[in-house]
Figure 1 (cartoon, helix red, strand yellow):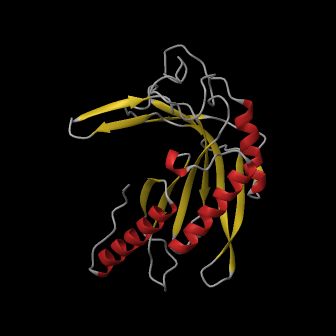
Figure 2: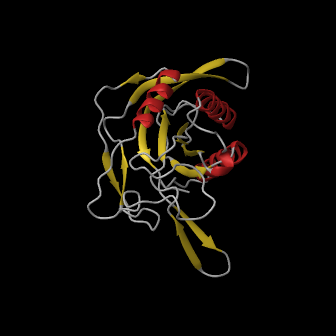
Figure 3: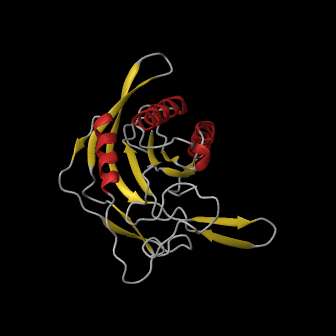
Length: 244
């Protein structure tokens, strides 16, 4: 069983909580201001266009739109997250209970349910310099607006995963809320995979594959991970929940 979390970077003119320009920049650390750099005492102000794009995406994926929304702090400590936390939505996301139809490998149709779509800010980017044992931090991407589209574990194969991803990619690019340029990381996916025996209804222990930004790479990763888990179980071992 496969569930997918898609991160869609919106193509608004400015970032989600500050006036710095959003999108790729020619030089590192030029699209940065005190808010997205995490200076003490700064206060975020929500970009209205991000809300409009989230609602549009929710309607296009048959979601219900929540009129009451909240943001939360997701704390983790990493060099590309200057505040020490990410502003995201937790228990009150903007869109819930949607779904999109895909075509399966045998030509039949099925609906992949969407649990939620929520708004959040992106982190910066760590650049690891090969051969120098050095890492650099570029904060141009910090504070860029993201939609996270979270599916239910309705996907049963790498073929269905690719079909679902291509459907969502087509929707967000048709709506004009995202450029869809996967080589720039504006459309990337975290894939949660668990395997179970055909006669079992209990989901197995899941493993998460993070930040894959190519349809082919996602298909290859799913097939490799499913085979890895099956071999472990058939040899009498257990699956350890982990991020890979």
